[in-house]
Length: 306
Image (cartoon, rainbow, N blue to C red; front, side, top):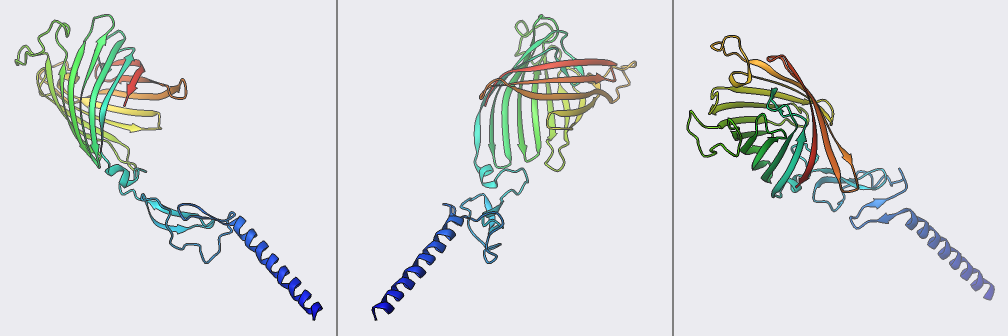
């Protein structure tokens, strides 16, 4: 009788030990995260779990299921396909931005405004919520040698998705900003030019951007300008622009025709100076076929604060 009891006890201990070892081996191969995500060794997820619904604990994903490794994965909520969670985009953002650049020469839309380096500061306030955006700001350019055009502009822009409209009050007086009467808006003497713009900023599958502008008050009030730009790479872009009136030169002033005033390639990148400090730089090769000119412009960003 004692022999049978001993054999029974040994059998019970053996079975219990084996079951505990199997449980420990299973536990070492299976862990549950706080997001109820199961992790097995690669490709070792049980077939009865593969593809089953789960929750990854992320409000930015839908249709969560277990993959071959028993990771609970979902699909990003991204209706406009910009790789940003729709829920994150619904939150509004607003703030001021201040920045400045140094350019080796001020060339705008194929027209040279200075032959010397220029300092170009900017200050703006922007608001964004969902697909709507609004920005108001000022931009200026001051030539180092005091010759050429100095400029101080006010602008505002509104956008919805990739489409936007804008208005700019360009102020480039006949002598310099300090001595000219800024508040003189009379048609014959003003240093202001009013321009309205229509923008298309492109989308992920079609990154071509377009802009149409019309000068409707001030110097050459009937001038139009159109521009197309395409990102060849993340750092290199190509631009073509054409206009009439203010933007072109004709042998016969009465024969005002549309002509290409800008063909350019622009390269932009940031040089990492430290973990938190970067120096944005750029360079542009510009042609003005209408004026038969070529310009090479270098740009250095001095600072920017979002």
